[in-house]
Image (cartoon, rainbow over all chains, first blue to last red; front, top):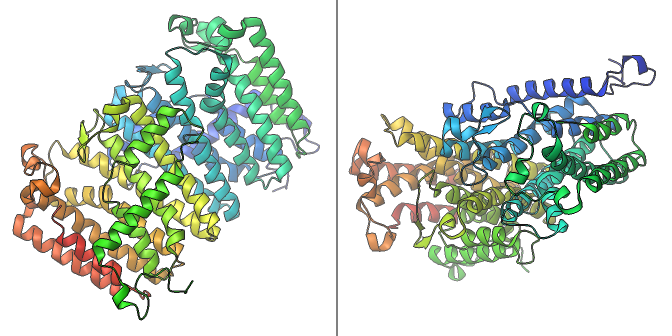
Length: 314
Length: 314
């Protein structure tokens, strides 16, 4: 094996480099395989719990957070193999948040990505516990995987700590609560930013930092990854707000304008559609700048991901 | 400070040693103070989330799991100060499990220990998220505290790993699912044992191992703590089954015989009340034996705790 195997670009490999869409699809497949291995059939857990965990993990999705773990790791010359189990773990955390978010007491959604939500298939109690199990198992997976791949214990601990911080009350869960309470009406853009930054942004940042730590990133590189994540996280969410207003229903797989119907307050509501588009561009540019000054081995995939997220239509 | 300060017994300190009830009360107070410090008022989280987390953490309870962390650590000559934050973290995990367990979709309880359950005060959505936040924050606390107290990173990682395993799908959550499904009727004692061992026992074992690891336990000592925890965990649960059948309602703070009314299958249901009592004694004896052969600095508090749990009437 060449030492460049972990970097899809290589030094003289321009012709071998797949386009970003293929790269995303490849990582998606690898993460799915990793998830299947992490929750194997033979697991000694009650069958329904196992099935409920599996069901939502395998319900598809963009697997963007795992992509960020792998891309950040590879941007620093780190190993894809070592990044994948941590990438799978963050997908478990994301999936748990969706399962709980869909519950009748929360958003009360019957469908997600065209499939019945977890509680519609397994019942509310099992859905709550499957979410709990996915969150808890993510921490287990991270410790197991980082040890298996020889990541220093201090780095693994930092990954665990950042996940707990960014998925916890000051992070994603805080964003969820603020979002829920915001349904009674947000009064300013700062409140909406808080929700976007924590509900979505924090796990983006975590994914990038984790990828960096697996590759042995230094403080400057970690700071660049954090800056990159902060900007693409918010850009992603503003773009979501825009697409939900004016996107193509066929491509999105959901009705547009639903935010208006639900009287949900979004970026375009506060600053208008054109200013929202400019904001996405400004944030993407800031993300590009952060990653270009980060001292990475190869920043190109991260740059491509930033552009891809900005231009996406679903 | 004398090097024996962390051990309440000391070498020549028989007269200074407080009875077990006082020891339990002291640890309970210290853990409560620690929990208050861990979730300070100034926390930058939505106010309702903060209040909901605080509410259930401060709703009282025996704080048995934290007691086991501290007692195991001290039995090996470890520092109480280092054990307390981890003790508080395990109480967060226990509390999260109660908050989710009480939800309408699960046990649908309006009261716990004479106080309204979390969802009755804050609503279902916030209760679900407060549970999620407590679980996640427990991992954060452990990493922060073990680093602050100079615990080697490898030991901290082992604590995180064991918590994730024993609170996760193969541990406590697995036990919860089995318990829920068992409400449709258990057919044999093995199924009941599975529930007791995982729903309750696993966190007991985790607490003891964590205390041991903080004190720098070797493999023999960890094995002894595990054996001790397995036995007192099951003894505790069988005793619970017995008390629920024949205990003093005033002391228990709940109606006895409720398991029969709810047609809940318990140890006495399968083997009768006398055999259940013998089983508690047998398990307590096995626990005592494990801890006496564990090579501890001072096993006396653990022995007292085993006896205390067996003799308790509430």
